[in-house]
Amino acid sequence: MALIQKFTEGHLGVLMMSNPAKRNCLSGELVKELVAGFDEFEQQEIHTVILRAEPGVKVWSAGHDIRELPESRRDPLNYHDSLGTLLRRVQDFPYPVIAMVEGSVWGGACDLCISCDMIICAEGATFAITPAKLGLPYNASGIVHFINVLGPKIAKEMFYTAQPISAEQAFNVSMVNHVVPPAELESFTKDIAASILANAPLSVSVIKRQFRLLLKGTPIPAETFEEIQGLRRKVYDSDDYKEGILSFKEKRAPVFKGR
Ligand code: YXS
Image (spheres, rainbow, N blue to C red):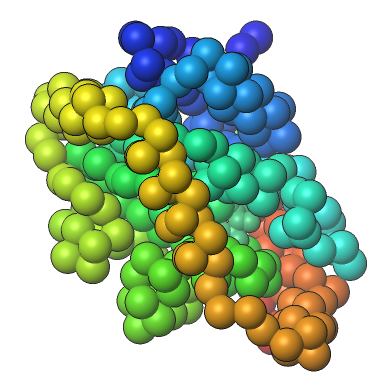
């Protein structure tokens, strides 16, 4: 059963996540279908993509599929992980990708939204980045995404509290481009897409590539990178990491011990 639906209207492509039973969690299968959709759109000369969930969802995406995270002692967010693969595909797609959001967005799906070129959300949408809630270490490129989009202060608060922020708060910190009434979300987003499609595709595409290259963050010394990897290993080797994953599967609150 397909976990996403694909639509095209001229040079506009739409990728719709359609796995509400699992709250559109970014499982390896769903990510594979999304990446294949982007590959197809690139062949079909699609010059703007809207990434959305089914109309009226309460949860846009619940983030990484927790059941696919390693039980322990392995990096849960390594370079070739499905989440990282998807985020790079979105950022390297040669034309703008607009996240059209309603409902709540969790964890890696929040990184997916900010990795898109724009976010247009309905009133009532919320965004939460939740590694701390699950005892997980986030990865360096993901933290750079949040620093670039939100600035360190708000990004730190979101990571430390793991609490959702409202659409209005997200708009106030320029995380989202527009907040609109739910009934207008689709038409508003398509109007924005139409204004992009009216411009010179080569110019838009090269400008997107320039943003991608310039936003990669300042290069860090190899030793700093190794220190980050060592710190992250302390987390994913910890008992708290195991407890975070297990508590989700057992549908109970985690009891963290700080080790
Ligand atoms: O029990 P069944 O089989 O019906 O399945 C349930 C949930 O287990 C499943 N589900 C998920 N499965 C895998 N990974 C997920 N992230 C996930 N989220 C949900 O979907 C079925 C319905 O879930 P349920 O009953 O909880 O729905 P709800 O409407 O009461 O609550 C919706 C949520 C999203 C508030 C709730 O499902 C939830 O809190 N999900 C986890 C959100 C989260 O913490 N995501 C972060 C995942 S880890 C990640 O993205 C990064 C690695 S990080 O952590 O670093 O940001």
